[in-house]
Length: 167
Length: 454
Image (cartoon, rainbow over all chains, first blue to last red):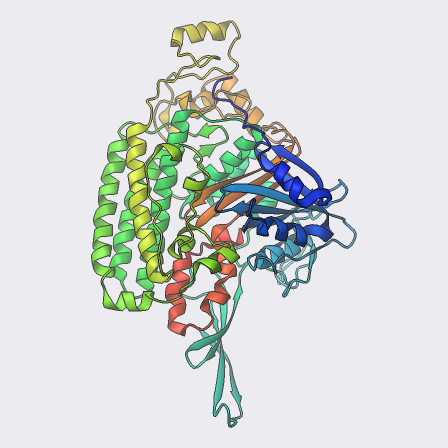
């Protein structure tokens, strides 16, 4: 069809990333030009530090950090890190699978202080604990709020006002 | 500001008299753009500690997006950054298109770029004007609001609304530029230039303004650590602009400069924003000149064909993938833009692109087409996967991360809000400043509640 060209899904960075990280890369794929690697929760700090400090890859900026709930898939959650190299002008997505039972990931706010609020938001919305986070409190919701609203099993129409009727 | 607590520590030999005062700025305060609370601990007039509380405008954007079909997320994106809603529209549409693996027509890309830059100017005009007002210059605020009004009139003519525009569609835009739009946009830009010259004259060399704005410095390394980019980062020397570094739409085909500051204080942020508005107008001029005309009837091979031949193909059932350009006589108010709709601003894929309103109300095929795209259970179904697409928003990188499971509604829509990161670093930026510096520094953040809290 005219004007309909699929974006190239050529792996440009992944060979280099796999070489750098070795067996720490559990899986990797390139979809629509977005290169993604999957690593274990325990390795995330060392992986991101290696990606940041490697001169060839130079992923010096944590652009975004968020979580995704894949209910009913297992492991249920994913924490997604979007890295950018400002000098090399390239992007990489790092994903960490997180189990439903006691979901926790080590914090990366030691590497990038900008992760502070992103992790607070992920905790607020999904209940994922970021171990070692200096101040893991709710960010957008209020302290009395029960549950984590962006989880797929949180009903859309459940209201929790502090005053007035609840449903 | 509400006085909450005065802590009088007994005088000691080291500190003869310690007075720590807790002040709550906000959530409802004239200098707070939207609702946000900044708790400051003061030692005299010096800020010793800051805590920022957000979430007052949380409207569950991400949760609501998971409950509607892909096309119906657009009205929610309008309400993210509500002073530059067109950029949000474009960002979301491009993320979904990336997921679908489609590319929009050339004219559509130029139109999207044009409206993004118009939005950027309105964003910066609001930020600079409001900052100036908070520092006492109401004249500049009124002038900039007038300039913004001129642009919003163009936006209104194009989209049918001023803020809640929902102009962009997956695979295209709602309608083509109305006849004579270029001339009216140029006239609006003339007003913007006049008002900016006035603002420049009143502010740039104004002793009071300069003294108050030479505050709140951050350096490049700080912005880098915190992930701050956009005008704030550029004022500190962080040379990053998504439009140039990860070019999307047609930004590679236009000339523009990325202004970089040297000192990274509020005054630099003001200068960077003023220069970016001039650069945006440069881009708009180039868009108006370089944008290809509407005649883009192309067949499967991209060859231009006549409308009559296209009708024959249509009668033979060979319509898949055709990009059509024809006018339908229908009540123009159905669309709001009031002109003949052309298919040149959409992808030719009926399974993706919403039909023009004239067709929806004028033909059974159009109605069914619309139904199949919009009604629950019938929407477009991007293949399972994920995509992240970033555009340069008014405050920095505006990223949309969309996850699809192959269903008619998004599994996850995540926004990377640019002013969120600056707000997350605000306690570091404000610490050590004087209390009077909060107003210009916070003004330069250009915090937009809708985008910050989502």
